[in-house]
Amino acid sequence: MLNLALLALVHLASATNPISTPNGVYNSSTTPSSFPWNTYNYCNAPHVNAEHYNRPSVEGAELVYMNVMFRHHKRTPDNLYPNENGLNPAAGWNCSNFIQFNYGGGTAHVNHQVVIPPSHPFLTQIWNGTCDQGTLTQEGLEDAIKHGRDFWSVYHDTVGFLPTVNPKDLYIRTSVSDRTYQVAGGLLYGMNPAYAGEAFTVYTQPTNIDSLVPDYDCPLADNLRNAYQSVPAWTDHLNANAALQARLGETTGTSNLSAWTSWYDHYFDTFTSRTCAGHPLPCNATTGACVSEQDAATVFAIGDFEYNYIWHSAQNASNYTALTFGVMFSELAVNFKSFQAGSERYKARLYVGHDGSMIRLASGLGLGKIATLRWPALGSEMAMEVWKANGKNFVRVMHEGTPVQTLSWVPLTDFISLLESQVPPDLYNTCMDV
Ligand SMILES: *[C@@H]1O[C@H](CO)[C@@H](O)[C@H](O)[C@H]1NC(C)=O
Ligand SMILES: *[C@@H]1O[C@H](CO)[C@@H](O)[C@H](O)[C@H]1NC(C)=O
Ligand SMILES: *[C@@H]1O[C@H](CO)[C@@H](O)[C@H](O)[C@H]1NC(C)=O
Ligand SMILES: *[C@@H]1O[C@H](CO)[C@@H](O)[C@H](O)[C@H]1NC(C)=O
Ligand SMILES: *[C@@H]1O[C@H](CO)[C@@H](O)[C@H](O)[C@H]1NC(C)=O
Ligand SMILES: *[C@@H]1O[C@H](CO)[C@@H](O)[C@H](O)[C@H]1NC(C)=O
Ligand SMILES: *[C@@H]1O[C@H](CO)[C@@H](O)[C@H](O)[C@H]1NC(C)=O
Image 1 (tube, rainbow, N blue to C red):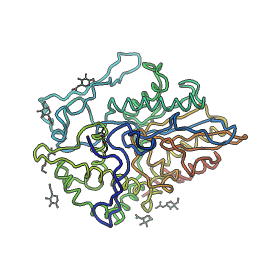
Image 2: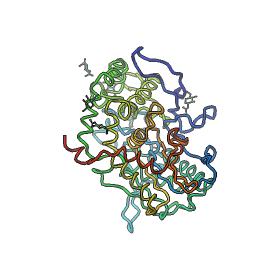
Image 3: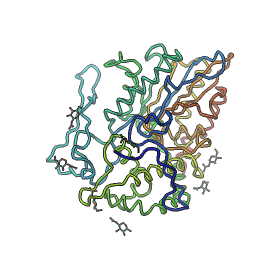
Image 4: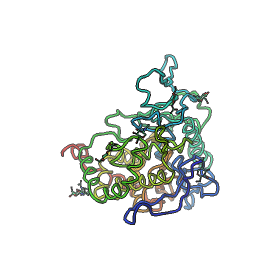
């Protein structure tokens, strides 16, 4: 069993290193009952649920509209080591335990299963088993179903806001990744098991202009980020942890590969995907060296530091976030404005995105000013509720199931202004004219 939960705050590496071991769970979707229910759990974020949900304390307040953004649930690693096969248990990863459908309406219900033929000359580059990279696992699908059930326990059972799972009431947008479609299906099925096998349309944008991931080009934003990842505020943490990086590089065969050494993103992904799935940390079959729990815990802490730096605390990070998520902030503003104008035809809009969606949303809404931002956990949730009280509309934002201090009751107009403040003027030309 991996010993990664609730480690004490300990300063590592050196006195000038800003990285501390984080509090949280990284090895199970279930937060131990001895911990507060809303403890950070990277494998399965806390979210709105009937047991811990309170209506606003304003008398007569009625929920009238909402937008919610989620991150998908547990998946296989998105990043692969150069010699991936040797760093996994013999059985590898199993993705044949739920059916992966992809078919054209009105035709045969084609589904696909990944095969890895033993004679394939490039076998060293992939694990054994039946999984591609970045594939939602069965456990991830189960977490999505539970998430849908919890969502329903609040917005149907407790508040009575959503009467049925109805495409006329619910607009769902996802990215073009299978795992976001599958999580949307899991959420819907969790809301109403009668949806098993039913068709439900989710909406996507073309990959190259998708605002949810986000995936649209913004060279100005790239330049800003490159600049603030070239200054000591960033490079100090890489230098302070050089011994860690050398160790990880030797064990996983990634030494001197810039995708792995310029930040800890790939180690974070490849370690958490394993620990959340109950797999061991990578062990090098040749040398016998394994990534230690202590090193993994340090990587998790560095991941939090990097996410907070890139999307919130770096000089120009707020510009970067606004440039790269401005299109999405604009879409959200349009949604709330059309609700305000009485022209919104949906009761709720749900977005199933990625960690890059959640961190930008959190940063743009000002959450980084309340507490250091952490890497958005799997199943992370931001629910933006509109309540009507005394004839006026107010917004309450729930992050990971708990009201956001600064956004627990703000006039709808102010919330729309906050969203619009995150949309740089003339965004296309601003991005492109560099
Ligand atoms: C996760 O870590 C905790 C505490 O470090 C340990 O008690 C628990 O058994 C581990 N759980 C799993 C599923 O590995
Ligand atoms: C993967 O399976 C092959 C046999 O198909 C085996 O030779 C190899 O050792 C396995 N990989 C690992 C990491 O055990
Ligand atoms: C994968 O999971 C399915 C369903 O639980 C099981 O039938 C199958 O044997 C597993 N495959 C492997 C290779 O473990
Ligand atoms: C932030 O942007 C300004 C204006 O372009 C620039 O002068 C400054 O160096 C940037 N800061 C960092 C840390 O990149
Ligand atoms: C195991 O370690 C050696 C020495 O650092 C390295 O060359 C090799 O790539 C590693 N193996 C794997 C499977 O990454
Ligand atoms: C990585 O680069 C360092 C410094 O350039 C060098 O000493 C080391 O041998 C390199 N390691 C590998 C595995 O290429
Ligand atoms: C950053 O945003 C501020 C406020 O919107 C703006 O005044 C400034 O010009 C932007 N800086 C860069 C480098 O884009």
